[in-house]
Amino acid sequence: MARIRLTICLFVAILLLGQISGQSSRSKNKKDRRSKEKDKDGDLKSQIDKLWREVNSLKEMQALQTVCLRGTKIHKKCYLAFEETKHFHEANEDCIAKGGTLAIPRDADQNNALRDYGKKSLPGAGDFWLGINDMVTEGKFVDVNGIAINYFNWDRSPNGGKRKNCAMLTQSSQGKWVDKVCRTLKKYVCEFIIP
Ligand SMILES: [Ca+2]
Image 1 (tube, rainbow, N blue to C red):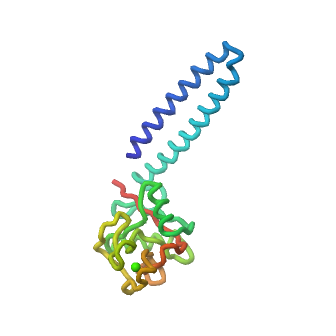
Image 2: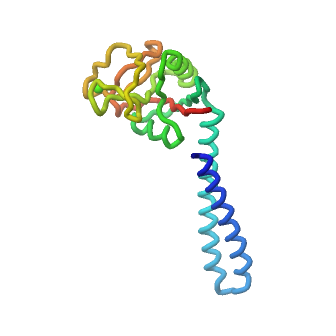
Image 3: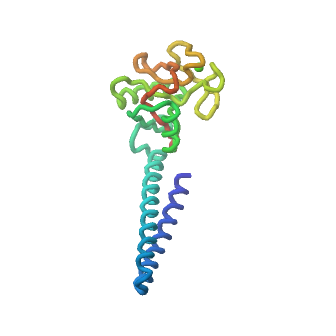
């Protein structure tokens, strides 16, 4: 998907560049039209700058999803940690914007790998959001796509009731999970499925 968008962006950028050079040469002939053409060129150049920035961010997104340039690659997943603290929703939206989701460990191996990576990449208080919550039905924990999960690693059974609906991984209890108020500011780890 990212590759298709990247190709489309490049194609549009090339078309716009062609338009600019064509207009630039024509504008030399008529003096009174020059300033108007200049404004148009400015607009097109700013559009190209915008497209160029989008191409670069798509390239970075593609790199995350294919080779895991930053972060760590484990079991066909790329985990990437973010030190900036965010609410659960903001953190998940940031992961989605980058082409992934908040990290969802599906078994003990993945959870241990995620714990070790988090310890290394997020020094200090090593707690971070996971893509797991029980916002819709109290006590029924699902992933960020709303699909029931089969692997759990609670420290104690989540007992935060309707007030605490978002899961985070804690380093103080060796990678066990606790339920937390979703509007708490926490660091987070995104995951990207890679080939
Ligand atoms: Ca709850």
